[in-house]
Amino acid sequence: MTLLPVVERELRVAARKRGTFWTRVIAAILALLIGIGFFILVENGAFGIGTAALGKGLFAVLTWLSLAVALASGLFFTADCLSEEKREGTLGFLFLTDLRGYDVVFGKLIANSLRGFFALFAVLPVLGITLLMGGVTGSLFWNSSVALINALFLSLATGMFISSISRDPQKAMAGTLLLLVLIGAGGPLADAALSPSGAFQPLLSATSPIYLFMMADARWPAEFWSAFAVNQLIAWLLLGLSCLLLPRNWQTKATKLAATQTTWRRRWIYGREERRGDLRRKLIDKNPVSWLASRERWQAVALWAVAFLFGLLFAIFVITSDKPGAPFLSFAWNWLSGVLTLLLYLGVASQAARFFVDAQRSGLTELLLSTPLTVHQIIRGQWRALLRMFGLPLVLCIGLQIAGSAVTQYRTGRQFAAMTVTAATMSTNAPVATNTVAGGNLRRTITKSASPARASHGITAAVVSVLNALTVTANLVTLCWFGMWMGTISKNSSLAALKTILFVQIMPWFVVTFIAMLTTVAVIRQISVSRFGGTGSIMAWYAVFSAAVSTTLYLAKDVVLSLWTRKKLNADFRAQASGVMRHKLPAPATPLPPPLSEPIAGIRA
Image (cartoon, rainbow, N blue to C red; front, side, top):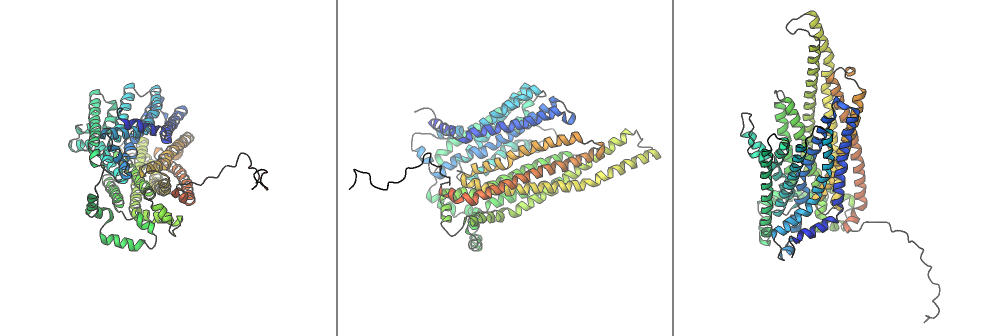
């Protein structure tokens, strides 16, 4: 028998999949799109910065986006690869042979990592162009490439470990996400907590792939390679545990399963008996699909946890917004709120697709279609279940995002206005201590000219925050529609969630950002600062204009995708459930001969 026989079989299967080809094509196209945008900025001389600075900016954008994709690869590619085999009952057949745990683990790892590695390698040539633009050294390029490959491998190993001890797809994705957050942020946060004096001592940070990526341009290369060794040790330890645990927990005994269903886990998932009875009596007569899709409550608990994090982050931001570190806090709010919003998108997309994936696998879809329920009623039942579970926490999250965005825009506008007044005062050479008439009149004139800009900051903040909330709401609705359609045509919920996030959020985000960037460059070239009364005013107008353009493009995208997926669901849901898509039969190439009116001579009875 050849070494690792599962690897050869899985590679042959992965080579025939369309996703293996299209993943690297899409990654290369997106990288080229970002690169073209930066080249246009260089050609137009935007923002008054040179080619080297733009090359460094392009390198930072591509590498950080690649890091985010690499860390998320374990969620979509390996978090459900082994647990899916457990649910389908095919993993036991492999262990009936002389295969070992490492054969199965490394076979699945290599096959499911192809798309991630191909996508990363497709970005590296575009990333290498920044060496020609300047601002990026060869050591930074190669160290960053090593850090990205390390992050991808660690993420895949984390997903493989969680998949070896899990059975449910959503729980496997949630466990992978929690473990990745612990590995990526646990070490740096612990070092920050253990260094109250402000002198950051990176002791436990070496376990974080994010810290390793940030150390790519370190002054001492030994720090980078020591952190790389620690990351690799963690990744191989997780793979070793996967090989050790998989042969021992691939099956669940019936007695153990029955005992588990009557313990606190069942209460955690479905609630107490009174709660289950009340929910059944309340929903089953209205729409049985709504009852089936909203029985589990742990997804709603997870979303309430995200809403709590939103509220905690907003409270910290408001309390400390007047402190000396307010600009850093505004940046932290924008970054962390974006991460939490992405978690909301991921949770909604996964839950919207999960019900139809599980229903098709268990045969529930065909059973529902054999009842008097129509396709429209089934889809409406799923919508009611989503609103029942996620409606209130989503409203709370969007409200907190509106308030946080308004405070951030208002603080930023005031800072630019203060900078404008300070610059104008300094340019007059008026003494600060001497209260001359000319100096006082000049200061009052500057203050009066800046007061309309300051007064408009509140309106600007309100407009931008409302536009952002409108974009988030439209994206959530589109994710629900598209996720339900992906659930009907996908093999598992992880793949359905990946395709939903990719086609609804990631790819449109690149296109919208590219168009908004080009539009902003054109506006900046046409509008002068003096026409709008200073830097603070033009920044306020820039924020409103950028938000308006982005919101318009996002709403157009959401309307088109929502209408298309709604039409597909209502038209092809029954055909997808039966496994037969309706196709028009092609016309025959040659007309068939006419039927014989009389029997042929010689063969008459």
